[in-house]
Image 1 (cartoon, rainbow, N blue to C red):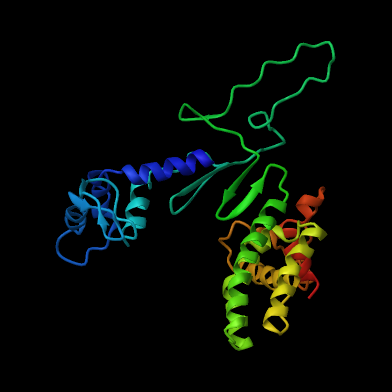
Image 2: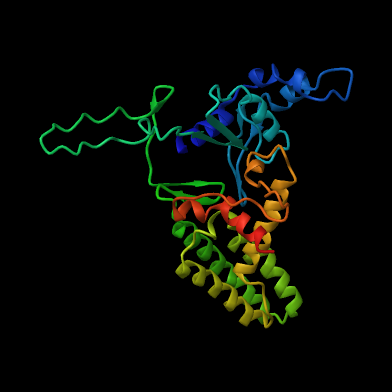
Length: 301
């Protein structure tokens, strides 16, 4: 997955303008009688670019690839350039978000031969040769113990301690600014607003995904940051548990109200119509995932 993400960024940085231009007339809204593609091509072709550091200015270079950083057209042009990158198999999902690309394959009927290495249990049998490494377009895919997806660290064993540790570290770094604002005699209301915007938003990043599967120790570590902020501000703040419950219920409500959502069918009401049908789980890891946890919360209203 890291290789896919890096390839997407490389493609976006080296995309040729004529390739993008061929896709523009069919996919852009024409606000004038002429196509906007010549304007875009003229704007991106033969650009003079330089770097300034203080009073020092580098020599200018003519650039004909990519687009200026911060250009409002960059996301649109990149999406057009990579629009042909689609999945041809029903069980393989290709998720594109800005310049990140994630490929997800479904294991059906317990067949994991493409993902796992079989082990021989016979002490007399020769060890089987290792299977060839998975490859994508003749490029080997590196198997890693963990990777980051939209700011969330996902490990091979689906434990959330690395994610929680990363969030706590970021939140503690921003606690310094909260203490500095306290020294400047800001009122508690403004300090609470700063906490919710800068610190709480970090602690609750993707909380509906990982909180139910977090250990009691990790939950206590998260709550310590909240208690430290309460002492600085001087007022009560919502606990991490309360934030998880409210956001999970809100997320589940959005899914149940959207029939086109892939998880909509998992929220199946019982004949009485007052409760949802519980999802049968065989492992605690699945039981503590989003859908079973959300159904339990909705049934305990």
